[in-house]
Length: 374
Image 1 (cartoon, rainbow, N blue to C red):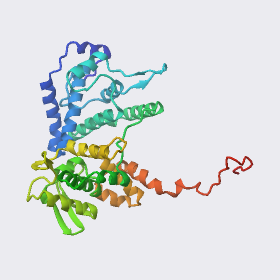
Image 2: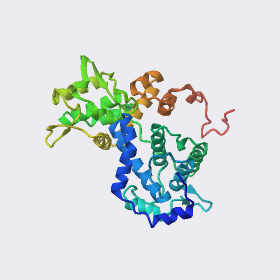
Image 3: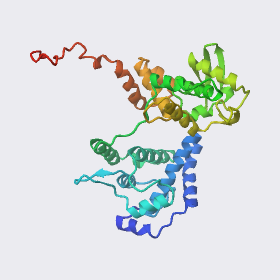
Image 4: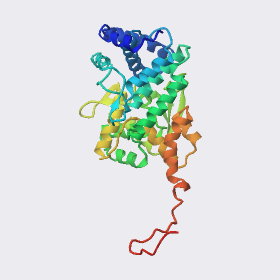
């Protein structure tokens, strides 16, 4: 791919019209590699959106499409410079994406609003680009040392300015109990309680995994134990069924839901009509997030809640309770230790002796100036 200089790039902005239909086809073709690799449907949708953005940005910036050849590292670096804001000496922030290109991306509806993107968004789009290259058997521009250094320094710069990478609030035991307390004995409450407990206690399931479960995927071992089976997931695309246990309150909640809404087949967690009538169609992944947010609001909990809060909360609580990391990963099916350790350590450090080294320290009393700690 020929990388145009900045002057040539800017001249393309007024000459190139973004065709939404062409962008969609381009993204669909690029996403075909993920579909062929058996990537989960919800993940493919997310990746297709990222690839559509890459296609539009490449066309406006370089006059070329996301196609049949790998991108050079210089393009990935330019992407970061275009989209991550950096502090200037006068205290203002700037990014290199020309305003005309920025506006064109918004008009094309591949960007929500003009301005820089969040660090998480840039990282996700780079990750998708890297995976797309690897699936095509190409060297990924995202592996370039210069790009990794740039991202590391960009994160440091934003952190120094008080801009931190946002993470969803983890649902550990106490907020989970608060969410469950809002679930009354109506059909909606019974469903939501079973869903929350399966997603949390069953290993911090992703929302796509929860809505993908079928009635035939669960069976009861005894009054206090159920098993549910996972097929293809984000990290295991082979589709080999793996059974995970549900015990105690989670098992009882699932039994209550199936008693309230019996079904011989079809989705395990289904939509509800007004009046508590149970539909035959499955909940969507977005509805799982809305259930978490609605229950958090009813419970009066402050925080940034989402479906992922169940997954991060399970791992964090396991760390708090001293569950071995291997057992946690067997339930969550995380493949990367680095990914899971951030949440696990956050929980395990709460009970670490390293946090109680000052337990026996005697501080001076306010009314005794002669009492000094030595």
